[in-house]
Image: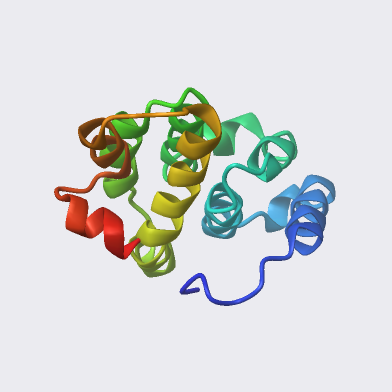
Length: 141
């Protein structure tokens, strides 16, 4: 779960559909991992599609609630607030490891969105959006 393995949207969607038919077998930690994997595909809309397959009671429970809140912040381009929420994700060891190991992937995705949105931007604003402290860190990305 280090973010190096391929991502299979269809398999994740199928599991969530099975949980709809067999709610007694639903495992909230697995749902949270699926949602986090979809979040890591940002700016793809996979998370939005999968969200509709997750029962509301599960969406309101942690860690799913925090993952969905991170998604809302990304969709609103509130990147600084996103990093605060993202660093506070709670859950099992897989969720913590996945969120920690995928920081650079998220930074690249946000940088891509910034590049598509702005013709020019100050380095300080870009660093803030990417949760970085120096231009040297940005150059490494």
